[in-house]
Image (tube, rainbow, N blue to C red; front, side, top):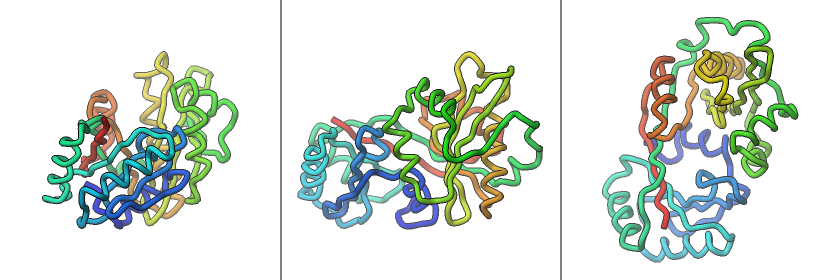
Length: 243
């Protein structure tokens, strides 16, 4: 789980921010502007919630033209268990269970990245934007990256003489968060994702970080296997609740 108002929690949220936020009692709601549930969901930031808070959060999301959604972390105690039951009673169902993983940078910076394999740049190059768009990370999600005020970088990976992978990293409070890592399907299973993780780690080390973290859906078995091989450990998770 990510406990509220910890370095991990603050960096995780600041590294992928909503366009704006509103508060409804115990919930903080993001205005996503089409950027996905990570930035458009309501999340519990206090244990003192009530049914009116849920209704207010739903109304705020609807006023923004986005479907009501809540993001619940694992292990938030009886308050979260009661909240799950309350949401389910209103027709919400669990969606997209996600794991949170982290690795010490030392496990990723022990091998240099081969020359011209990976690059770390900002702002993103046109080819990076094109690759993200091809993989479903369009203008709304790329706008999230532009909003980040933390130190940040766009990764580009090359293999077989062509651009084949992209990623986004932001750093804060001695840890870096990796988002939007994508490798072209036709060029997967060639080791490029491993080099991208190492490139992210080297960049993070240069920012004074000691940890690299990321989120991955529980159903993404190939990615989970890769991260396990690369020394990442599971530190909890969260799920969305949607109608």
